[in-house]
Length: 544
Image 1 (cartoon, rainbow, N blue to C red):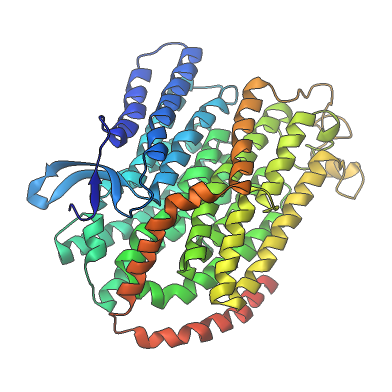
Image 2: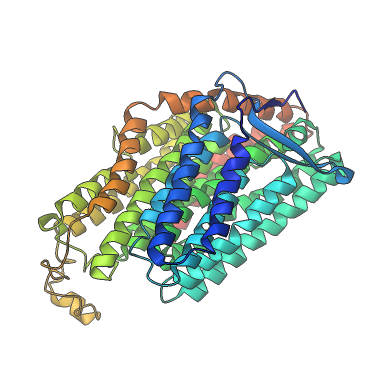
């Protein structure tokens, strides 16, 4: 194991602490009384977890692709099953994203959650442990336990604190994700039978036949594609987002969707490189369809939350596109986009939650002319909307630019076909921004809303402008914190790229080395033909 790992050199088990602090916090919360105390306790626990994670950034060795801060405990020796956790340049950024987003989830629930506050805080803390466990596990069984473990808290967040159709949304989320997880479990068992180990770095080092790789790749890819979610597995996402409370939407957008991309990078590419090369054209085509379809669907929404939910399908399409380009720029762009999407879309869902608390509506026709009465809110809305459409100088521009650069570098046609997705992002974000900041109609006059049953939300502007208060200190604090990352990553992405550089180079080497020892190399020549056919396929779907 030593050739894959660097044992933890700190004087304390940092990764185990990250897993245990929220878990212990949840147990303690069971015995606390008083809603205000519960809120402050959950905020304190998530903040302490974020502070504990800071050495992962400061002490990380950027020159090696080995797993760092590793802790190893023998768990079930008879089955060669160990408790082993560690991070590399890919997972460390997702761990930090999780620890720093979770305090914001508590803050944005401060007044939004009105019932069963103790239970909400407990479930949210348990959710943090499960999500962090996914990113630090170096054992497939441990990974799967955390992967399944986060389903229950997320289901409860939607089912108990969700909107009018929370039952439908929560069950659909659970069934979709659980179905994908079953295939993941099958592949984990198959790999253990084939190799006799659950240790992920050892699984990457084994050589497998092409047929076995294909089965493992397809089983894993299905689970991860549902989690992303890629077209056509995306239908659970808008329902879950719209019905979830603000914190649930932030967790879904900022962290849960990233687990699909992380799974592709951790399992599919290094363990099944030959199958990855063979399936690459199909995954690229699915990514392009996700980008275009997600953008078109977002453009037609009148519900702000549903608009942002569909935009996530398009944004995550750029992530999978970058991953399956299998080149340095593409995978780095995909990793950056995962971080950027967590920052930007998380902030947009917080902003939607803030306005929903004030107007009790998520309709564009109701939430308009806010520029006149909520200047601070509108400023943040403008910043994060521009970030979402990848405006130069913001974080999303760097990630999207790298993905498109990687696409044009390898397959110019693919790059050209991704461009409409970027244009659609500008269209639906600017439409939303224009209607919320300035516009007070859909172009059909004020009576349009009354015809559709929305006339009871206030005056002709859709709300009573005297009631709407601008952002308070707590809300400004959340949004200002995320704004820092929009411009820091947008103007100086080098520290993040340095963190992932060695690990991504090693991953590409693993894929390239594994791809030449399979009996499907003859299919490699078909890639260009398949990708050239993609244009006609995408056009037919879009026209449909």
